[in-house]
Image (cartoon, rainbow, N blue to C red):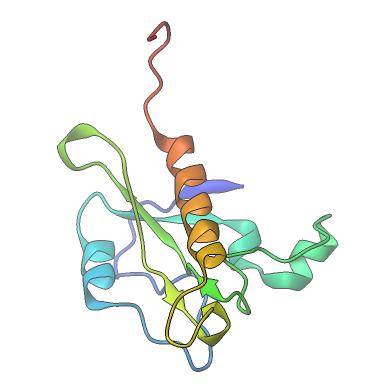
Length: 130
């Protein structure tokens, strides 16, 4: 399931760590420690590929799997100024490259698809708006 962690005492680690991938950026860790920002907890991200298989998934998570070309290890959710804000850090690995030194457009689309999809879950809904 999806949930927000509440009342954490110390900044949480990114939800998945990779050998050879950078540590979370300082701004992410600082934001995770701030009042009101909480990591988005999603079981299929945190419990790994074996848990996914045991619970009915047939593929890997396209941008949250440890082997993904572009990897979003986690999101933070907070509400500055009253509205929800979803913040994540992304790591672009060598498999995200298209032409030498350039990120593949499909990799960028996968990243945006994930961000827009999760953003939709937390966006305020106004009924009757045209």
